[in-house]
Each structure stands twice: as C-alpha cells, then as structure tokens.
Image (tube, rainbow, N blue to C red):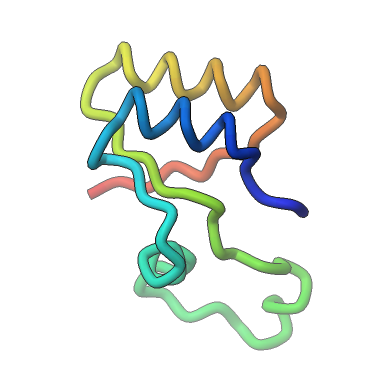
Length: 81
C-alpha cells in the first residue's frame, strides 16, 4: 500500500492542525494496544502501522473525516481514549 497521498495529508493538516500526526514513531505507538496478539495471528494481520493519526474532537470533524475516508477509499481504525 503506497500510504496517504500528499493532497490527503495536506487536507488533514489544514483541517486538524496539531491533531494530525504522520511521524513514524507516533504511528508505531498507535499500531498496537495493550493486548498481546497471538504469534499465529500476526502474519494474517499484516502491517498494523497506520499511515496517519487524526484526533477529531467533535461530531462534525468525525463526519468530515469519515466522508473523506469513504470518498478516497482510506481504511479507518477507531481508537478511544
């Protein structure tokens, strides 16, 4: 998978400012939760590192993000605080 297109990154940065992150270190942190994935399952999952992290703070922002993802065929993985 080639990752997010530069124009999508620009849209996200414009809309979410400091609440969007594309740094590799941060993305690796978000690739896993506190649970341990069984070693037999790991090969089936593939690369869990996201292309970006976005933290919407309102329903409006979330609706916009989901619409963009749907329009561009970008998978989303929700994560709560």
